[in-house]
Amino acid sequence: MMKSTLELRKEKGILVAAHRGTSGGNIPPNTIASFDIALKEGADILEMDLFKSIDGEIFVFHTGMEPAQLDRHIKVESMTSEEIRRLRLCNVDLTETFLPLNTFEEVLEHLKNKCILNLDRSIKILDDVMKIVNKHNMADQVLLKSDPSDASLKMVETFAPKVDYMPIFMEEDVASEKIENMNINYIGAELVFKSESSSIAQDSYIDMMHKKGRILWGNSIVYSSRVPLAAGHNDDISLTGDPEDGWGWLAKKGFEIIQTDWTHHCVNYLRNRY
Image (tube, rainbow, N blue to C red; front, side, top):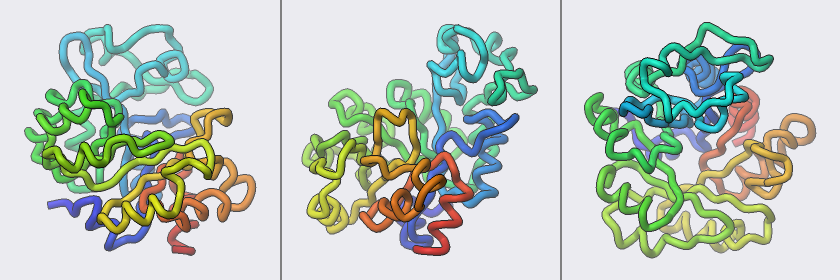
């Protein structure tokens, strides 16, 4: 059996989550190739995005990114699995590679017993996702995150009550008390905040979560420089400036998981300092 997220945290210290694997050059994100590279670089958790084809098969791809990663203005979730299988992903120069969109089953089987899998964008199709996870006997490797809406929490309680779960709190904790009273394996939370003055960025809140045995997920990734996910303590600062102001700030603040687009550099920094 795989060690749980909490067990890995105790054993290894701060965990690194590779955002869509490690991509760049000719290797597109959300592919088996990108996941393998991230593991070679020391990732503890692989974050990936799921969607369901119009005929019900689950694939790994971030919908909405079709123009950037397929060079087509299409919607893959409105296509059949046969049509999706014919697609080929593009590299960073929008040149077609030989790499297809991987099915969720392919990815699961390839990564069995290797690491924790954060299945993002999966909450609306969680019933189908968990059928496949359970078919492969891999529920112990899964980490789910979602918005803390009543609908999303009900999906977790119904289809994945024993799976490691973290709500995504944006600026404030709006659901801890509610989740504590549900049949959900509430191990911690992802905290998203624009400034250090946010309530969930305060030491008092972080200490309270730690006293309850919960771990916290922080984001150093940069979706947009205009929308900070951790008050600007990000990959860009860590790479082009001082990593103490990026990954170091998150580590000292008390985040036990750091999600990054630069796995190798983040792992090397954390292993040398924490």
